[in-house]
Length: 64
Image (cartoon, rainbow, N blue to C red; front, top):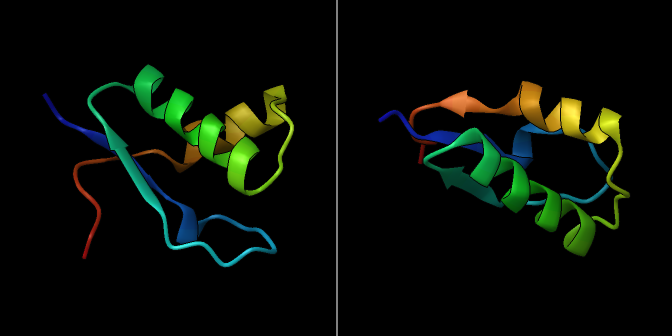
C-alpha cells in the first residue's frame, strides 16, 4: 500500500510550519491534517479547506 503525505511547508499561510503528516489512507491523513490546521493554524473546517488538503496530498514518503 502506498502511503500518502502532506507537507505543511508547501502550503500557503502566514505561519512558517515544518510539520509533515503521513498516513496509510487519504481519510486518515485528512483527519490528521484537519486536526493540525485547527489546533495550530486556527483554521475553520470548510469545504474549501478540505479541497486544499486533498489537492496537497502526495503519494509516497516526504523528502528529508
